[in-house]
Amino acid sequence: MTTIAILGAGKIGEALLAGLIGAGRAPDSLMFTERYPDRVAELTERYGVRGVETDEAAAQADVLIVAVKPQDIDPLLQSLATAITPGTLVVSLCAGLPTALYERHLPAGTPVVRVMPNTPMLVGEAMSAISAGSHAEPAHLQLVEDLLSTVGKVVRVPESQQDAVTALSGSGPAYFFFLVEAMIDAGILLGLPRAVSTELIIQSAVGAATMLRDSGEHPVTLREAVTSPGGTTIAAIRELENHRVRAALLTAIEAAALRSAELGKAHEPG
Ligand SMILES: NC(=O)C1=CN([C@@H]2O[C@H](COP(=O)(O)OP(=O)(O)OC[C@H]3O[C@@H](n4cnc5c(N)ncnc54)[C@H](OP(=O)(O)O)[C@@H]3O)[C@@H](O)[C@H]2O)C=CC1
Ligand SMILES: O=C(O)[C@@H]1CCC=N1
Image (cartoon, rainbow, N blue to C red; front, side, top):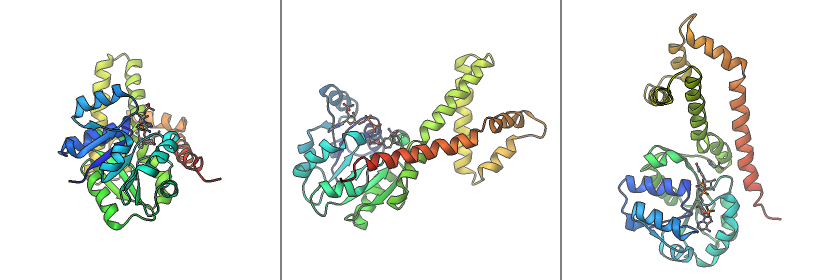
C-alpha cells in the first residue's frame, strides 16, 4: 500500500488523517510530522499513527502531503530539498502556493499536485479540487484523485482556477458556519432557548444541503418553493436584499480569492 506522510497535522492535516482512517486506510500506511511533542503524542493516541521527523517522512513515504500554513513553507521546502527521495510525489494543500514554487526548490523533475480541500474531509464529505504541476504525470493525478475520493468529492481544475476554488470551497464551510451561527442568534433574539434554536437551524441546514445535493433542482427553485405569496419568507428575503447580503457574498468571496493570490505572490522569486 502507498505510504503517505502528512507534513503539518493541524486543522486540515488532522482532518485528512481522520478522514483516511475513517475510510478504512491502515494506520501503519500513514505518518505525520508536527512541531511540538505534545501534539505528536495527542495525534498518535487519537489515530494510532506514527509521528516522525521531516527527514524520516521524506525518506520513507511514497507521497508527501504538505499541510503547513503558507507562511511556514520556506523552511519546510529547505529541509525537503535535501531529504526528499527523487521521484516522490509531493501534494500541496496550501492556499495560494503554486506548484512552480515547489518545483523551484525541490530536485528537478519532482512531481507536484496542488489540491484545495476543505475540512468536511473529517466526515468523508470533502470537496477537493486538484491540479497537476509540470512534472506530474496522469498517474500521479489519478493517485491523488483516488486517495481524496475516499474522503469526499474530487474535481480536476486548471491551476489558474485554484485561487477561485480556495475562495469558494476551501473557505466555503466557514461561510456556512458563520450563517448558521448568526441564524442561531436570531432564534435567541426571538426568545427561543439556545439548544432549541441550535437544533432547529442545524437540522434545517442539513435538510437544505441534502435537497441541494440530491434533488437535482436549482437553488432558486428550492428557495421559491419555500417562499409563499404574501408570507413570512419573502418578508425576510426583502431584508436580506435591503442589506445587500448577495452583494456582500460576491465581495467577500472575491476578497478571499485575492488573498489566495497574494499568498502565492509573496513566494515569487525576486
Ligand atoms: N483549515 C482549512 O480549512 C484549510 C486549510 N488549507 C491549507 O492547509 C494548510 C494548513 O492550514 P491549517 O490546517 O488551517 O493550519 P494549522 O496551523 O492548523 O496547521 C498547520 C500545522 O503545521 C504545523 N507546522 C508548521 N510548520 C511545520 C513543519 N515544518 N513541520 C511540521 N509541522 C509544521 C503547525 O504547527 P504550529 O501550530 O506550531 O505552527 C500546525 O500544527 C494551509 O496552507 C491552508 O492554506 C487548505 C484548505 C482548507
Ligand atoms: O483560511 C485559509 O487561508 C485556509 C485556506 C482555505 C480555508 N482555510
